[in-house]
Image (tube, rainbow, N blue to C red; front, side, top):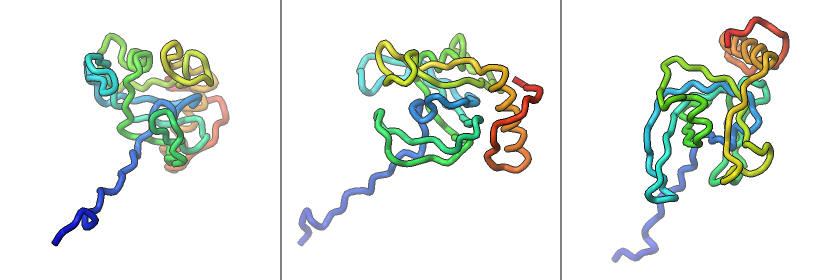
Length: 165
């Protein structure tokens, strides 16, 4: 006879994706690949938000990113520098990458991701947003991406070169 003790629960499958928290304070290249309008909010029924799916590359040479779940560190570091299929539904990020609610094919947005009040938890009154890269950061990103294309490894920040951004 079968008893309840004979059954196993499915194994937990941790997310392998980075989130806005993962990229806080980092110089990133966001390349949107999909745009969804009015996605229902599972935590606030009746509310919707636009969402982008993007490939995100950390171009600051600082290595992998921490994984977060519900605003808590998981203790897992995701290697980089390329993170594919990252979802962003934070209004200021979505509007910064897809102005006018339009996906621009081939868009490459270089920015630093941070909250309105840097270092403070994201939430009401302190939304996530994007800060434009400085000319020095653009040069750093251009060099990093060139070295990544050549040798496929993380490259340190450095010399000022002509930026394609």
